[in-house]
Image 1: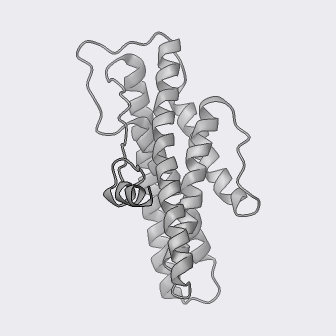
Image 2: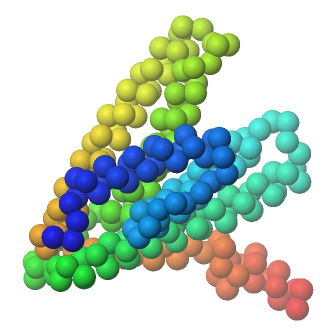
Length: 205
């Protein structure tokens, strides 16, 4: 077996939980190796993206700053999607090293493990920031009760998604399902596909 699915998902979710807390105190780092290094880098782009999105919605930020934030969001989102693919590629390598081959009738899944790990990453960020809301001293009991309900719902979703990922990884290991890396092919950052970019380059040329 290339990996223990339950243990791997536990490591991934613990990594996401730990780094979200740490990165609010120090600059984002990545002390991990192998697959977890790729998972951490993907998670880091979500972390950076989350906080740029907060700035983008600020009412006291000027247009020039919003334009900078928008470009940063586009860049982080591109990197985030690129690293979802890299997570899936790393898992394919683990399966190949263990000589796991999908059965002739292997089924596809509606999302890849990398996409599920991305969703867990975002959920860990949401839970952390919801917890911050719960700890505010400038809100009333009604606010705190609403946040507590949201945290409970997030924790349930996180647990369900974690278990679904374990089951998907087990099915990939057994050959019951096949993993394919689907390229996102984002058009808005591609100067050959976004008409506003290639027309602008043509004018500049």
